[in-house]
Length: 231
Image (tube, rainbow, N blue to C red):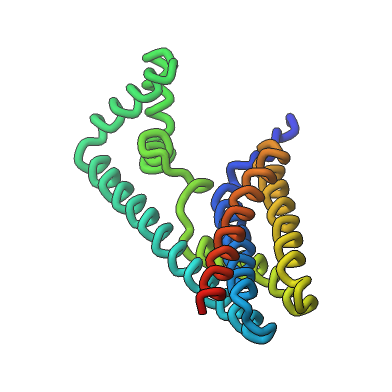
């Protein structure tokens, strides 16, 4: 018996990787920006810490709710499409067979072979064949709302905790440069790691995330300094 051929692809990581990277990136950027804005306004160390903790909790809950609603909507759309396909298979099985055959022919399969493939796949799992090849829905890529929500919330909290840890350890005039430098380093590491896991170029991923993080923190600090001076 020939050994079973197995391959490891990155497509099965797309769902949780997207939510984790988005959550951690937002956690670092939003919390560091909030901390820098409050610090630039001249707030006390205690007020800065409270603002950062409040931002962590609010941001994690917002990420969880937003991700759940978004992915839940996708899951509902997928389920509605599957229900419609199930009804069409019941009402016109032969028509659906011709439709699947045409899809395979369009992909370059010879018509006779395409009919045979469609027939065998539909005999095995008609709905699964149409979901995968007609609708583009597969088990790997299907929406998972709960997983996305928890992943986003947890990764946001972890990301937000990093600049908060710096705030807890550093006070006074060193706080702003310390939070800025460490947050940018965290963002570069996160961007590079995400790129590596996803199979993209590490340097590009790190620079992309770091640039937008630096821009967000600079703008928020400028606003804090402006309103702190006005106050």
